[in-house]
Length: 198
Image 1: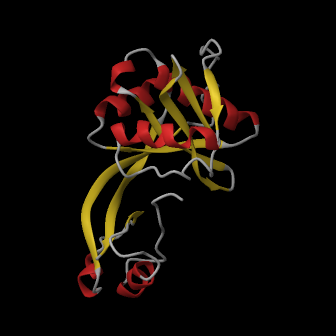
Image 2: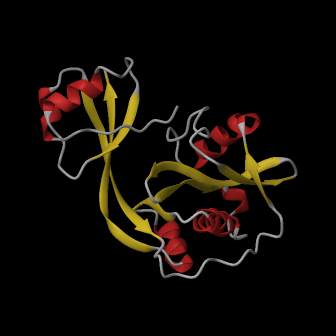
C-alpha cells in the first residue's frame, strides 16, 4: 500500500525479518536513529541510499490557520488514485503507490480537471497525525496551493484534538521554508533509508 516500514532496532536480525517481507526487487523506506551498518550482514538486502530529513511539528500553542482556500480543496478518494500517483511521481518518484491514499484522508486542488496539488495523512499515532505527500505540480507552483493544503490538514487535526507533524528532505529548502512560514518547528533530524531486496 505505502512503501514505508519499521524496524524493532538496527540489528541484522530485524533487517532479515524485514527482507523476508519484501518481494524480489521491491524497495521500502525506513527510518532509524541508529546507522544500519548491520545490513552488510544481511544477504539479499541493500541500502540504496540514505535520505537526511527533518521531522517538524506544528506547536500546540500556535494559532489555527484561518481558511483561505476559497473552496478550491476537495477530498480525494479511490477514483483519484491514478492521478495522485502521477502527481507524486513528478515530485518524489516511488514514495506513493496506487493504494497510498487509504491511510488518508487526502485532499487536492484541481485546475481544469487535472489534479495539480495534494496533501494528506499517513502515520497515525495516539494524539498525533503526520501530514504527508505534500506536492504541487511544477507548472502550478507559486500560487499558494501547498500552503492552503497544509493549513487545511492542520485545521482538520486541531478540530479533533490532534497535533500535526511532517517529514521533509533537508535539501528541499523551499519546502522547509514554507513549513517554517506556516509555523512549523524542527523537532529533530531523522535519516530515512531506501532499502531494496535483491
